Image 1 (cartoon, rainbow, N blue to C red):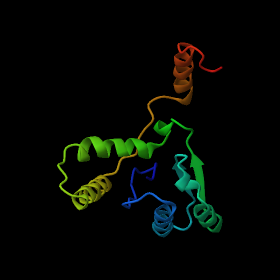
Image 2: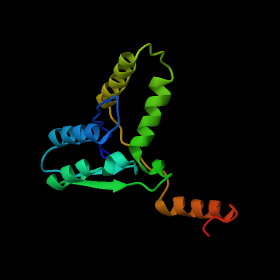
Image 3: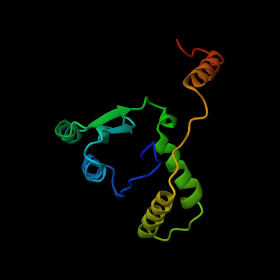
Length: 144
């Protein structure tokens, strides 16, 4: 997801191994203009840190990996996009096959990209941290 424009580059794989992630990185490398750096926000899944991925990244220095802390998927805007995909497209459909599900996802990506919109944070970092600190004070043993 291009966080500036909201445009999504999607690719569907039936498995989520390092080899599939490498194929996705290769696609990004071809689709994102060569003069731009690419910052990837990823969870800590082992696939994203596999030796084959580290080797690929070393050979493609414009790619920069950033990992969200555990249980912090809300920091990754593409996770919000996946939530919209689920709520507005997948839960409504009765997919009779994997191929039908994949088509539904591709259709959603295409429709989204016809009029992409970036997500806009409505709270400042200070607001979020203040609320988190308040929440942690109410949890016995939190922060110890």
